[in-house]
Amino acid sequence: MANAAVELVKEDDELTCVLIPTSGKQLLLPNVCVAEIVPWRRIKVLNGGPEWCLGFTGWRGLTIPVVDYSGFDKLEPMNTNNRRLVVMNRARTVNSLPFYALAAQSLPYMVQLVEEDLENDNQNLGQADVLHVKMGESISVIPDLGFIERQVSELRQHSVKR
Image 1: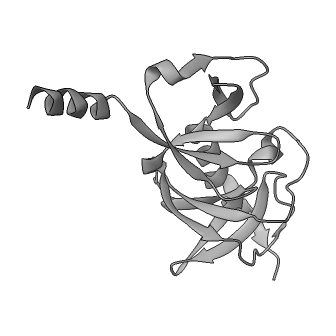
Image 2: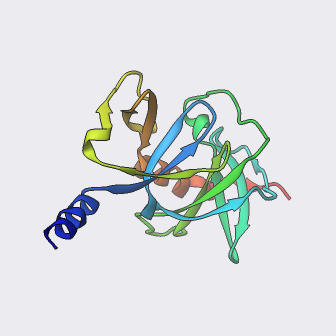
Image 3: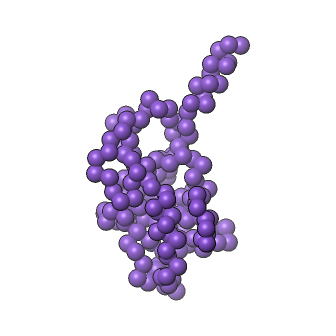
């Protein structure tokens, strides 16, 4: 019975995360940030919108903005094959919708992490990056969700192209 208690403690130390491949970066987020992963769908383009916003799409009766993370750092545009939309739960919803979508290069996947899996690697942080972490041989980015959500909240000033 003592072994079962040890295993339970080990599971509590793990964090379930989602790796989201974007153009040029792989985002690492706790899975509670993700509401749903959906196939790519039609997007209504913004007139005069910021580079990081692809436009708006419909999701569960709502119209939500679609964010291209690579647009914050003016990286290469996203490849159009195998794209997905990762609908995000917003942490701050004051005067704004509680959701937005991140454009993913391909299907995101879940990983179980413990502190020993991560190594800090904060070289060349982008404006929407909080931290670069090294997991084995790959580097992932922990995005600044507060920054992204502030940008999304300011989209009201742009009009949607019909």
